[in-house]
View 1: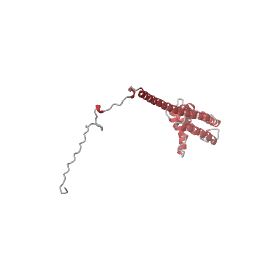
View 2: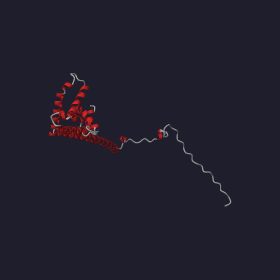
View 3: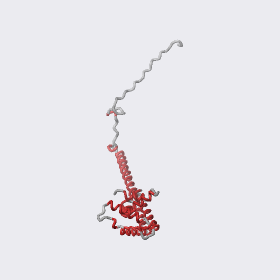
View 4: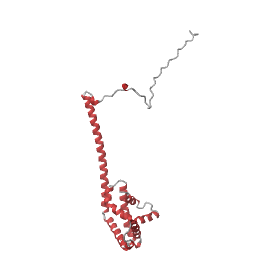
Length: 222
C-alpha cells in the first residue's frame, strides 16, 4: 500500500579476488594455469609440419636475401668510390695539372739549391719544418723564381683547387681513401709542408677556409 514503506535490502558487493603481491608489476600465475602453446614442429599432422618447415625456410631465405642485398649495396658504394677516385687520377694527368706540377717543382728545386746552406748538417724534424715553410713563403714572392709571380700563382691555385677537391672527396666518403692515398698523399704532404705557412698568412688576410680541405686530408692519422 502507498502508506507502507518497503525496505530495500542492502546490495551485497562482490568482493574482488585479491591477487598475490609480487616484486614485479605483474602477479604470479601458477604454472598449471598457463597453457603451453603447441609446437608445430612436433605436430603429428604432416600438413601442419609441412607448413611449419615451409615458414621456417621462408624466414631463412628472407634473412639471406636481406644480407645479400645489404652486401650488394655496400659493394656498389665501394665500387663507386673507387670509380670517383680514378676519375680524379685521370684529371690529375691532364696537361694543365702536369704543367702546374712542373712549375711548382722547378721553383722549389731552385729555391732549395739557393738556400741549402741554411740547413744544418744533421737537421732535426723541427729544423726541416721551419726550413720548408721558409722556402714555401719565398716561392710566393716575386723574387722566388724565373716565372712571373702572377703566372706562378695561377699554377699554384690550380694545385690548391685539385688537392682541395681530393680532400673533400675523401673526407666526405665519396672517394676511396686507400686509392687516393696511393696517388696523392705523398704529394699533398709535401705541398702542405712547404706552403702551410703561406696558407696561414692567407687566412689571416681574410680567406679563413683557404686550403682547409688539404689540411684535413693530410692531418688524418693512418
